Image 1 (cartoon, chains in turn cyan, red):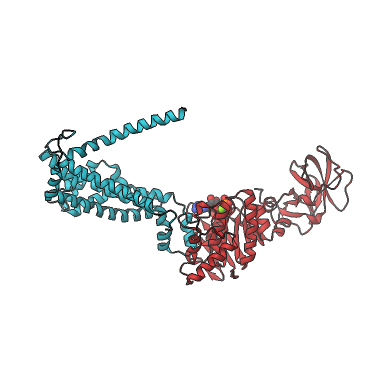
Image 2 (tube, each protein chain N blue to C red):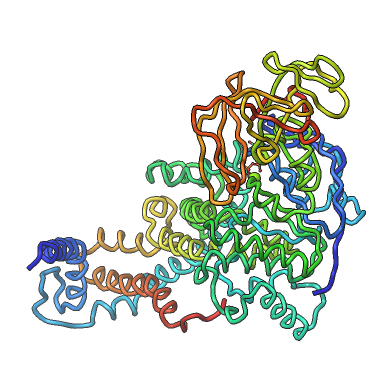
Length: 266
Length: 361
Ligand SMILES: Nc1ncnc2c1ncn2[C@@H]1O[C@H](COP(=O)(O)OP(=O)(O)OP(=O)(O)O)[C@@H](O)[C@H]1O
Ligand SMILES: [Mg+2]
């Protein structure tokens, strides 16, 4: 066999090893969630759905899941609109103003999460934004915005500036140019930014743990609280549900894209 | 396609960029409707800046621009109704050829039928029929160029602007597209403004050439005017080959070059220091003792002779150390060889006197 093929095998083994390391803990969680006993022993000795019943019958979990999804969707919508608009503005005014605005918007990505969280908590306490949805919404928007700004900005800078000039020379005003030329060029990045912002909010623990109250909790916080109170495989069942949901969210665009017939016009 | 063309007029247009660079300095220019005009000049001479002020992408610092008699200095690009072909075509990558071409027909009150007729007509004109459903990526460079032309011409703009449209093509394709652009210009009758720094494109295509250097318009004229009557040393040297004899003007009729008096026609220049410019085809080589009284004559040393089939190109070096070249028909007998000391002669009526003021590029 050629060296090439052997190199190929080595790569496969390496990839498999990495995959196992990354995925194994996740795959352990799934079987545990179906365990019949109140323990984390792996593999479970007998199976049941009682931890799932536990979630379904508990208003706490329902409310946490609802809050997280609602929050994630709102954050996604707001961040996608604001972030794309901000990126367009920064791109148009690339001088010092653009640099300063970029710096401010992207800062939450660089500042350690706990520092942001403490700062957010301190000021939101004064503004009565703790323990309510508005507070979560504001905090998560600030934290997720950089992901949209950065991805959209990078795709804007890689599109040919002559395209917008061409559209203008063909009589298109600002709106038509944006809708028919700029947006199609940056659409994949806007989509990716939207996804990032949803996941950022859905996943966020640090700021949420400061802003939460018994009345309003996001899913990660509810999980955290439940683990500290009592240890049972309910948490594994919740994790499995989240795993299924996020996998679906990530796979959805791929499936949709493959379904679309080849060469369909935009 | 119907004939629809407008003149363009620049009045003292100056563009100073924020960095302080002068893109174009006090340019005035009148272009007639239907003309094919090229902007020619070296890199950084202000051709693109001038074209962009006409397109509306650059707002002049001072001066005004008229298109078809209307002052458009403050009109945005989308309202100027110009056709523009960009250097790298700037085709919309996510749209088919048809959608690219159709883009400029939007909002012009045309019926569906009329739109598709226009698209078909223009694609036929640029010889792209049958490729309507391709994406730009699926086309060759030459085909993309044709789409760009079709897209800019389909709404019958009164002026078409092109900034180095052929520079991305290889030599053979460039020659072919040059012929095509000439044909399309005759077919549509629109005013064409064409930027290039390739003198052959300029000479071959244009009704008139606008010669730029360092942000200034140096000379405007037909290709033969620019070639035969350059008004500056720069113009003489930028367009075509030339032999330059720099010297001091000693009378209304003579210039002294390395101690040799040379006669010239036309009035004396304003400056004392000037140069006589002679094109290679107007020079003759003779034996040193063969000179005629009615000719100017300069001693030269032959440094090289190259054979080009129909003519021989003879490189020479003059008394002042400058080099020059001349051409001899290959049908005449080859009388000289490298290293010969000869006389280079010309009829004073076949040379021009230019100011030496503008140093060579
Ligand atoms: N946006 C700008 N900001 C600052 N200076 C500029 C800008 N655009 C052009 N210039 C300067 O203006 C001058 C003229 O540039 P222009 O692009 O018009 O030259 P050109 O004749 O088109 O050259 P080329 O043949 O290289 O395209 C140059 O010195 C250039 O550096
Ligand atoms: Mg240019």
